Amino acid sequence: MENEMKQVELTAEELDAQLERMREELGDEEFNKEFYNYVITHMQDKPEMEELVKVAKCMYADDLTDLCADVALEEVTNPELSEAIDYCIETESEEALNEVLNALAFTMLIESPVLVVLYPSEGKLIPSYVTADGEDENWMPIFTDNSHVASVADDALVRSMPLGCAMYIAQFDETVSGVVINPWTQNIRLQDYGVSSITKSVEEIRRKVANGELDLMAENE
Image 1 (cartoon, rainbow, N blue to C red):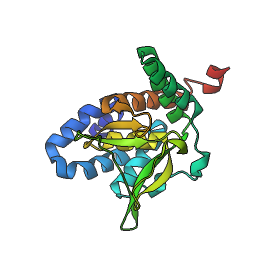
Image 2 (image 1 turned 180 degrees about the vertical axis):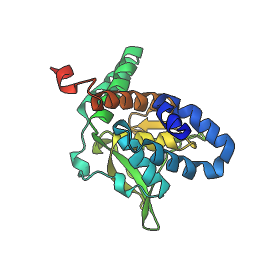
Image 3 (image 1 turned 120 degrees about the horizontal axis):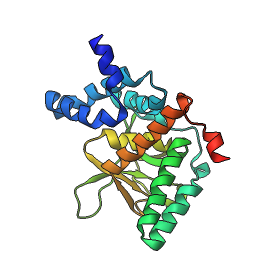
């Protein structure tokens, strides 16, 4: 009964606090595997956490192959997100930044694919991060479409992946400061707390949809 109560009480909003407790108990070296297993065990029956659990399983196996979408690179387009980013760069306003955040949440909610760079390693695919010149922070690069992907290393692969999966990868990895959108052309950065805020918002919407509390089709009419 006590274990059941703990599972029920744990929510997406309490995840950060739970992570800190686990990290203190296990130390950095063992934390990641234990955390992925924890997510898989405790979140797999929650419909709103389906994407989170899928990423956790792949991160646990050190292989992101199953996260790659079956979409050709040239077919990946995200017009709403691209328009919001263009507006943000043009105006540099807080309103425009909020439009980008809303567009990211929408893109994640509809599971639209973006482009990411992965590295093959012993038959598996692992994430590739970027570091700006003169900085020591790692960022998860995300590309809205193929026009923003510059030349990559010879041993790197460009793959399509649902935006939410890329966001969760950045959220899971403590060595990553956040995501950077179109780093070689527009360089829009979203730090880890912003990534977490968006994923939690989408999880809450998905929870309401699963529970019949929200009808997305009705909301769009």
